[in-house]
Length: 188
Image 1 (cartoon, rainbow, N blue to C red):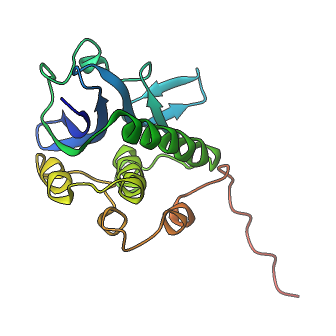
Image 2: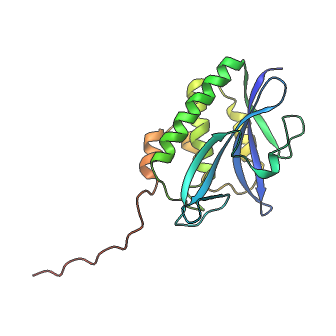
Image 3: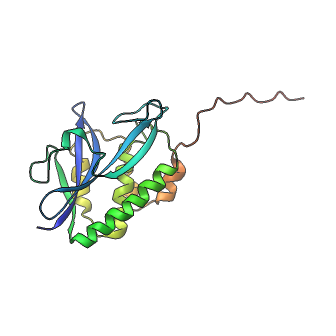
C-alpha cells in the first residue's frame, strides 16, 4: 500500500469540527500528525480551544497529536476523514519537510488565536495549500472532510483553492502583543 495524507476531523460539540491531517506509511502507521493548537504562555501548555490571549501554533509531529488518536493507525482510526494524496515514500517525506518549514514560519509570526476566524482550521487550510504546491491533491476529498461537520470556523476556502496566497493569510493574522490603545492627544 502507498503512503497517504489524510484530512480528518475531530468532532467538537456535535456540529463543529477541528480539522487536521494525518500522514501514514505504507503499513498504516502514523508518521506525523499536522495540527493547529492554541498555546498559552501562562503555564506553557497546548490546548485544543484557546483564549484570545493565546497564540496559534502549527505542529507537524508524531509527538504532539490529539490524545484520542495516540494509539491508532490508518485502519483503526477513531475519526472520519478522506485521503487527499496517496504516493511514494520519498514524495510524502518531501511534503513533511516542507510542512515542518511552514510550521516554523507560521509559529514565528506570533499570531493570536481567534476562536471563530484564525484557529486550528486556519492552520489546516495553510497546510493543505502548501501540500497542493508540492503534490497533486484530491480537492474533492478535502471538501468532503470539511463537510463532515456543519461548522468549521477558521477555514480559508480561497487559500484551499489557491485563489489567495500564504503571504496574504499571514498579513491577515492578528499578531503582536496586547496593548491598550492610547487615547489621541487633544488638538491644540
